[in-house]
Image (cartoon, rainbow over all chains, first blue to last red; front, top):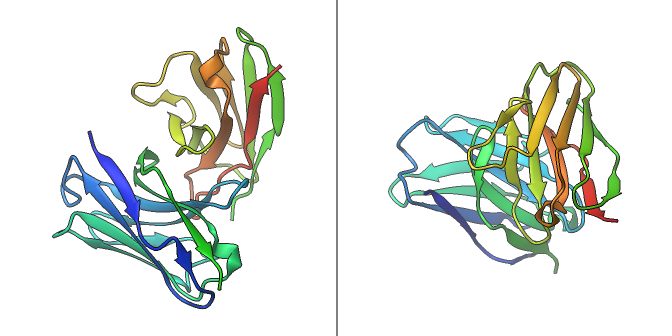
Length: 116
Length: 107
């Protein structure tokens, strides 16, 4: 059974870069043909799709975030990562990593707060 | 971007009730529509994909229907564990927009 776990700083200063990692267990990130996604949810609000990376390395990003987002894969560590630059308070949210199209496996989520 | 709406935004129901939630897309998305259940403090759980296909392990009391722009999620007999927020999501084109959610609580 594949499991995903987000990790990274819980507090990021405005204008800095938010960096999160999703560690995959129970299967190799490079085996099969899967999409690996990031989705976020501000407190008390709905879900926002951030972007995804395919097993081949191709990426798709939300146009509203595209200029600030990078998603990458590290097959040696069985991880994929999210970088979001120039963050503001509006980027405060629970960030989820997920696998599949549509995502059927999700991490538990990690809260990232943007504050000085 | 495709806009997704859901109705109602919330509903109160009793155990055993049949519940129907509606999702509408701003343009045709064929059958590229997914449904998720989310409980407080938990990650969303995929229930239905491709409008009407039941995700593995999801009980058959959940069903989905629709195509084009109008879709429904039905819970045939509401149980205590079904009280949650339900989201639809289009997977027709990025940014794969989610609906605003429907909160189902106990009457």
